[in-house]
Length: 383
Ligand code: PLP
Image 1 (cartoon, rainbow, N blue to C red):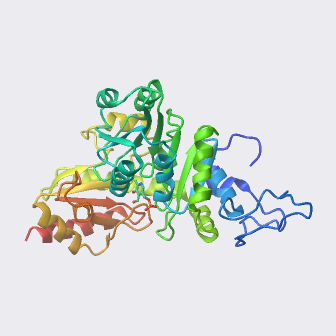
Image 2: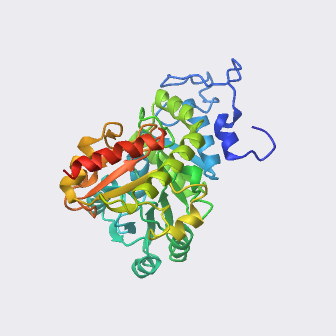
Image 3: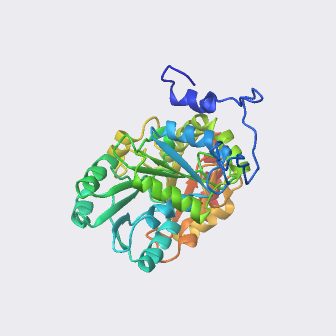
């Protein structure tokens, strides 16, 4: 899209306004070729050689996500995990890494295991507390600070700008898993982060029908080139059909996320103080720790993820999840349909998640329907 600095909503709706020059199609074709013709003089003037390195199906989605995140470049991967893990694999044995105690549990488990094998010194800190980060960081030795905000599944908030300042003063990069916020409500690069990561399986794709991940960088530097080499060599590239689905989903990102955010805020307020609910965890609640940070770095909504703690403990939480009719009892988040999950059954005893917690991913259904269904399930769980 040329000239005016269009708003992100406009960029997303038209997927940057690209057209396919050969056909004038407004939707890109799905290229399926894994390999490209070499010129007779032995050069690859097309810039394409082999689909593990790069693929035309990535171009538009990568350019759009980079624009939405105000980044220099984006790189698609086969899943969120396939995007996140190279950020650590690009480090060297002996490097010190700070990661949050509360974060996506699979990545935390992988990091503790891989970190030990690879010789990384991984330290889990209270990332929500800048003083704790400052105390743990080792100038010259800490090479990466990994932040997730709001963090799964307690939705704790980390101040990206404050943490970036601490990381940079010590010579470390700051990477942010911004899956839960999405680019609709937070742009971590503008707040000082160096790398942003999304599980594009969630809000970016938005329809629970693909696995994808993405990294976005502020600079095209050596670290970014190492990440590019890791994608090529480890082969965690996205398929052409998934790239198409992702681009299709991105066009409605703002509508979906805003609707889900509004419903989540409504649901959180409804169940806050409810007799069957011991606590509602949601960044948009005025009393929630980190609400002031959320107000600063989340624009136009506080996300569509919340958790509730059942007053009757673990048994009541599991029964509530069993009794819902409309909410889907399933893992993941960011789809059009609302999901409910008893997280400690998934994460096990090593996790900081209390056993009475139900994680809610709010979709785009009518909020009153979602509330009524949860009301009847909570009531049944009290019997
Ligand atoms: N980061 C967060 C915050 C997530 O919720 C998830 C998946 O649930 C991931 C990363 C991993 O993404 P994927 O499942 O696409 O590999």
